[in-house]
Length: 84
Image (spheres, rainbow, N blue to C red):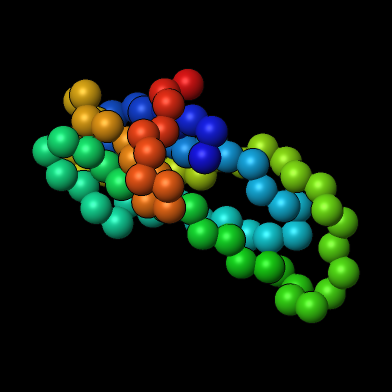
């Protein structure tokens, strides 16, 4: 993930991914201090050749409540995701 933006109870995650996969975003953990987010990708046609080309994607996640200063943390790296 490269960054996120927030609007009320919606979080939009910005990231780079391959053009031959479908992506989904989730927030598996939400606490009073942080929202942990995750991007998952699935190949559309496994085993079929695909160009190695990346593009920027945006995926939305519904929050239990507005972000209100909570950190957004990448579940894979454990690092905060920058707002942007």
